[in-house]
Amino acid sequence: MRMPLFRGAKRWMIPITGLVLSSILFAACGETSPTILDTHGPVASQETFLFWVILVVSVIIFVGVEGMLIFNIVRFRERPGTPAPKQIHGNTLIEIIWTAAPAVVLLIVLVFTVRGVLAVAPESQPTTGNTVNVTAIGHQWWWEFYYPQYNITTADTLVIPTNTTIHVNLFSNNVIHSFWVPKLTGKTDLIPGHDNTKWFVANDPGTYQGICAEFCGTQHANMRFTVQAVASDAFNTWAITANQAAATPADSSQAAQGEAIFKVQCETCHGIVGVTPNYHMQDSSKNCDEVKNCLLGPDLTHFGTRKLIAGGVLQWDQQSCQPSNPNLMTQCNIAVWLHNTQAVKPGNDMVVNLTQDQITQLVAYLITLK
Ligand code: CUA
Image (cartoon, rainbow, N blue to C red; front, top):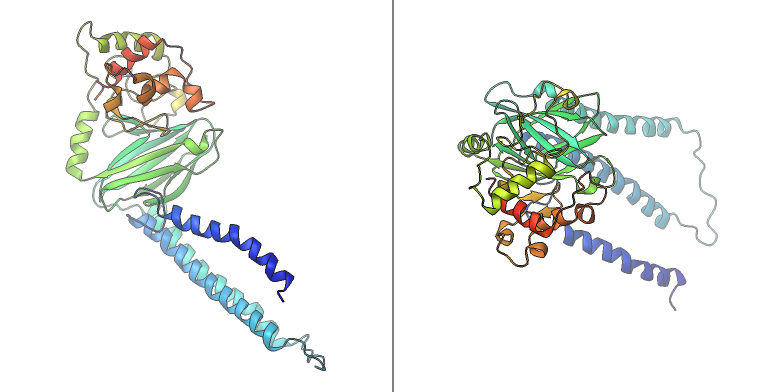
């Protein structure tokens, strides 16, 4: 006959097995999926090492304690006619052991923690080799990256050279965000009125996913960015291109009409170097609030080179965004975004009212911004 307890347990095993299997399945999602277990830089390696130390210590304690418990439950279970067990209340030796042992365990964890904290602290930033400075500005809900040495501003994509120290100034003038690139570096908060700094290095070229790790409003989960680590030469080439003003579209082309619409409808919030009057990049030494040209929306000077739209919510696939495409409004994500930004990303600051023709002209213009 089956025990009722066993029948109950079996019912519960279905969702639990499902959860375990799906977490194994989702853990394998995509090459760029963020994980702290696949590190590509010294800062993330230090942090992951600490994770393993604490995990191993915890597993030893868990297996030891649970093993003893199960052994004792089985070995010393009550049988018919067993006498009451020997009472050892107030045993000094045992009291000392179970006070000292956890203290020793915590001391081991403390030593490794302090070692890890010191290794990744701002003071431990390497002083040899090149350093690229970046100001990461948290907006609701997208990331702005400003390179003071190169006078470049990007949105949602941080291009960095490999094997180079990246020094990041973290700045927010709204709410608290948190900068996190799991494969490269752990989380550091962007706190209004308290500018944190951090540093990291990417050893391998590649695309790494970044995440905002502090709840910052309704679209917090959609506040993502990518880090593109490239070789130094490729970075320098990129910086030269990114530093140039936007190309001027040919007279009376669709793109030129799009530029005209941009000047009327978009310039309140967005800037394009060479188009927006007096628009240049921010000075990282000043707060965003104090800079005259600090705009609400992303710099669009080289929008045509980007891969993501709207803080990483949409892909920016330019094949389907040719103005001649009859299905532009449904197939081209930038057209989808311009048509109804609130449907794509509810609560964002962008409110526009554009006709289909205006959207087509703007798309024609935006794809020229390489
Ligand atoms: Cu920004 Cu969450």
